[in-house]
Length: 155
Image 1 (spheres, one colour):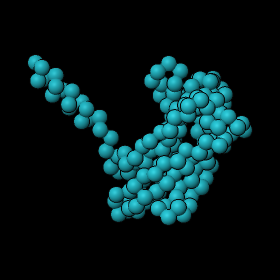
Image 2 (tube, rainbow, N blue to C red):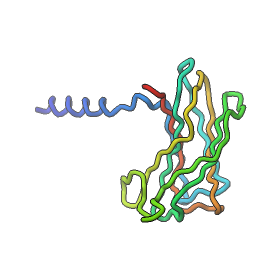
Image 3 (spheres, rainbow, N blue to C red):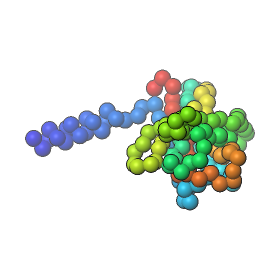
């Protein structure tokens, strides 16, 4: 019986593996707020010669977040720090009409969101991503973390 439980546990663990994820990391904000000066930066490597990838933004927030939407400046650089793209992206964290939070809730009033930054072809090498909040306030209350996820399309 004990061997059967171990087998089921290992099978469940292996089936939950995420084959499309190439990179994922999040940076926590110690004061439960994302200030205008807080640029979160990530470095990742692409192993394949050429493939298509989705680049996604992760946001973790609480119910203290004062707006329905978030705006983020996104910059992608290659290994020489040449800027490949800079753009403003946004997503709704709360329903505009009802105020109900979107995203996945794991613990109490904490919600995780993932939205697209872009899809693009990347060649093998090192890349750098920077994220900055671009809201009407210097201190964006209720944001616990921001991050980046890179997924290979079709994996």
